[in-house]
Amino acid sequence: MVTSLLVCVGLFACWSPVQIMYFLNFLGHPVDFGDWMHQTAMVLVITNNCINPFIYAAKYHIFQEGVKSLLKKMRPGHQQSQVSAIV
Image 1 (tube, rainbow, N blue to C red):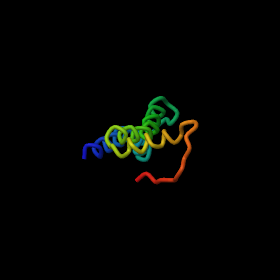
Image 2 (image 1 turned 90 degrees about the vertical axis):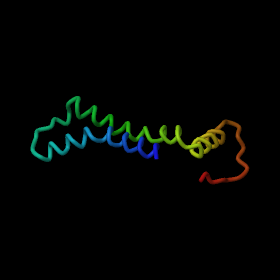
Image 3 (image 1 turned 120 degrees about the horizontal axis):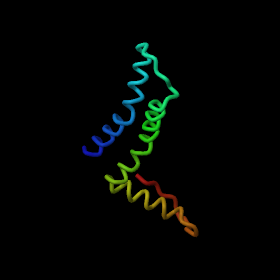
Image 4 (image 1 turned 120 degrees about the vertical axis):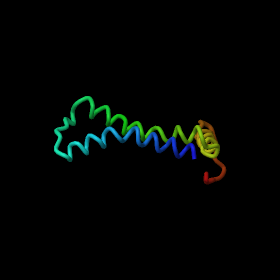
């Protein structure tokens, strides 16, 4: 429940500024899509794509174990004897 709330708050915080700007533009308010405000809003949108893995890494033990397993397999000199799926 807490993880879902964090994801929703992150989504809302990162996407709201740019969506408000697009809505104002739709209503006829002139919006300069090259100014610092729009660029900052777009950085927030891009940042949202980076937030979720960190939330999951902090909250889900299964996700943490999967990442550890993946990193171990990527180590130089690691011999993979069998293919296994992470569920």
